[in-house]
Structure formats: C-alpha cells, structure tokens
Image 1 (cartoon, helix red, strand yellow):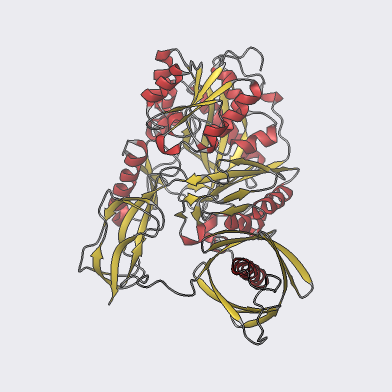
Image 2: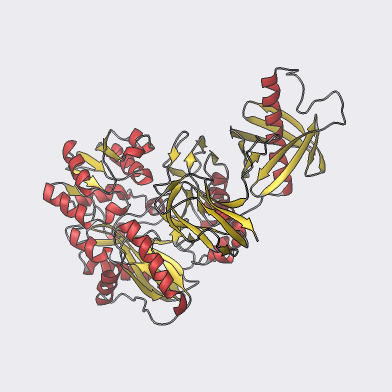
Length: 627
C-alpha cells in the first residue's frame, strides 16, 4: 500500500478482531501494538503483536488514548467490538491528533442509535419496518450483537421483555434505551458491505446472508445469499449505497436488512467491519482491513464499483464456547488442546493453553471455505470443522457440521427461524457404530494408562485377565447418557451389547478395528474428561469414578451454575415452591444473560448465592427438595 502514512497502529480490542488487524498490519509493514486488560495478559493477540500495553479495561477510552500516545501510534483501530461504534473514541482520537480507523464521530452517533438511524434511512428513501401489530421485537437502541433483544408475542409479555432487554442493554452498552418494531418470522437476514472515502466515493462489496442465528447472534454466514433473486439483490445493494451516500459515510460499514420474498426492510447499520467480513474477502480477493487503513489515512478507495469482481461462493461458521444442545449455555475454562487442518481459512483467537474467560465473548474461531459453488464450499467446510481437535470448553462444532450437511441448508432454506425449525442439528448424535468405536477407544486408552502406571504385565492387552470370562468395567457419561463398557482382551460389551474389537494404543492415538473396518482416534485427556476425535467429529466422555469419595454426594438436589459468571438476580426464597422451568437465578456470562431454572416441581430448601456474587462452574446456587 504505497504512501500509507500510518506507521504504528494501536489495536484497541482483543480476540479474533485484534489478531485479524495485526495480520494485515504485519503484511503492510505497519507496527501493531495490542492492548490487554489485567485478566487477559496471556491471550493470543498479546503474543502476536509487536508490543502490548496494559489498560484497566478494553472499553476505557481515556486509557486507550493514553496507550496510543505512549507508543506513539499514528492510528487506533477499534476492531469490531463496542469501541468500533464509540463516537467518544473517534472524537478523542481527533482531539489527540490520532487517526481513528472508522467513520466520523457524527456518523457513528447518528447510525449507532437504531432509532435515529431508522429515521435517516427513511429520509433517504430506504424501506423500514413499522411497529404496528404483533408479534414485535424489543431492541436496544445502542449496540448490537443480539444483546438487548426480545421477541414478544403479545401485549401481556411486553413489560417483562422491555425490562429484561433494557437491563441487558444497560449492562452491555451503558445505555438501557429500547424500542419496538414489527417482528417478521421466517425472513432472511441479509447485509451489505459498503465502503466510503473522504473524497465522496461510496461502493458496495456485495451481500452476505446471516440468517442462521441463536439468541439473535450469527453462527453461520455466506455470500452470495442463496435466497436472493437478481432483482432483490439489485434493490438491496442500491438501498445500502443510497443510505451510505446520504449520510456521507467514510470507512467500512454494514447495512443490515430483512428480506421477505421480494420485500426488503432496513434493520440497522453497523459502523464497523463485521466478524464475517472474511467471506467477502474470499469472493472479492480484497483485504478489507487494508482498505480501512487506506481510507483512514485519507486515500481514495483504490477501486471503483465496476472494478469489484465476485468469484464463487464462501461460507463462514463461528466456533463458540457454548453448548448448543443445552440451550447455548456458555462454556469456559482452559483449552487443553486446539488444532485443525489448513484445508480452509481458520481465524483463531485461541490456542492450546488459552483460558476462555467468562468476562469476554465466547467466539473461539471462524472457519471460512471458498469454492466455485455453494455445495462444494459447504462440503469443504463441514469436513474441516469435523476434523477440529479441541479438548476443554464445550463448543458448537458438531452443530455446525450437522447444519452444513443438512438437506434444508443445502437446499438454501436458510431463514432466521432455521434452528427452531431444525432442532435436530443442535444435538446431532453420532451413529451407534461411531459412538461404540469412540467408547472402545476411550476404554482401551484408559486401560493402557492404568496398566502402564501399575507396571504389571505391560505386554498384556486391555482388560487382560487370567480368567477369560471376567470383564473389567468402565462407566462413561456421554452428555446426559450413562454407558457401561466391559472389556477383556478383544471382547467388549457396550451397554450390554457384545462387540469384538482389536485395539492398539500408541500414545494419544488409538486404532480400533471392528468387523474388518479400521478407524483411528485421537484422544486428549484431563482428569476424568476424555475428548475422542476421528474424521467424523468428536465426543467428550466423562469417566464415572469407580469409588465415590466419602461425603462427595451433596445433600439433596439443586441447581448449579452451568458456567463461571456473575449472579444478576435471585428469583426464589427459602420455603418457596417452584415448578419445572421456573427461573431460580439469572447469571451473566460471556456478556449474555443465562437463566438457571428448576428441573421439576420442588421446594426451595436453601439459597446459596446473592446478586453480584461471582460463581464458578458447577457451583451450587439453590438447594431443592422434591415435593
């Protein structure tokens, strides 16, 4: 990039955003300095930067400006988190003589509020949603990322939804203002990437479909959209460029729309680059972070609209530390092992040894496949994600693979209710044969480890006994299912079903041959947890102790924290009767509210936590007694 005046850029963010900016800066010869919060010193973005500066909080604007001055940065890149939509940061950079890599402060302020943004788009002739009729959706006026949003089916539920959304918006954005508009179920969520420069040029880089979402947050994006006709595409792209031109947009921005058949309706503008920008890079061959730096440095966009070329199809999935099968419960803790192939583009924000903290977003990585057509891109991406090796936090990897391979997805039936209409992808169960092989592999590996530690007859096969009819037993938890595995030599019994399997254990690798078919499994262990991987995916198994420690059983039943977090509110008192599904405690973890509910009718025997208290995963919250 010839003539770029930016020599040092302060990257004011963390995770995948910081790593992405650092990668382009390095390629351009720009020095990249990271920021890090006190509890984030060992994060990957700190290790990859040229230098790093400690700040009390990633959202502390004054600290970010001080850090930029300290390292003599020419520019501040805010990533694509909350600072990217901070008019205060943009104004503070201008006052300090530092380039802000983003739109002008007045543009951020106008479009960063969904109410004023909607008015601006209406003035520009862009179609919008009204607020008449039911159902409606409650939205936070500030911020994004699905936070502060609630769908309301009727007026009786509106008050509670407004209060909950406002509380979440206040916690996330420091602004509890919310509004409502008509909710369109079954539509497509399609966004347009735009760029503008200080010389009055505005162009688009095509559309992206982001309809597959959980909690109003995206988990899969693709370009081009499989459900948009040429005529609708032209309307979308024209509306985005018209809206951006009307407000004098400078920098990268994303105009988001609902598409319902041939009708479009404006949703919001994200005054920043999006997490999913990589699929646009794949089909255009452009580096969007480089374009951001060029525009921020005052250069004109290096291309005109007619020079933008689109090639093939690209799909991105977000691997998050959440349990899709358990209502997207956040998961955290140490990543003991993390590895994958390079068949597709992986933008990682973790590595082996990284600790996933509950205070930050749950995104671990993005995987992006680019191919000549949609079917091939989906197949490549599914194979690559299935081969992901992770031991530690629970992820949505299996759900992503199931989605990419589902007939509905491959047919292009992707709307905002995709996951509700296809719950089978949320908890995809491996075939009986696949699960049998993984259980045999885990059992053989455990037996080999115990045999090595015992140093008795190390030559003997798993489960070897002088009495051939006697089976040793190991009990595993696979999710909520408890499975007993008996073994002696090549004889196995899985849940009472006899199997014959030849196994060979070499370090963390276990070969399993059953009925003449050989499969190879990689195992990663930590305590009683074992992650078993093969080319079709993985299963995490927890070994049930053979002998329970005295006093290990808790008195009575109860509710525990599914993840480390902060208690936002306690909804029950001692002596209260509760029914299945009643809210007991609300936790905040990874910037999302999580309800802990009663599993069935019960009496509250004790409440062990209070609002504001920090809790660990599996910590007891409420003691319940059966009615």
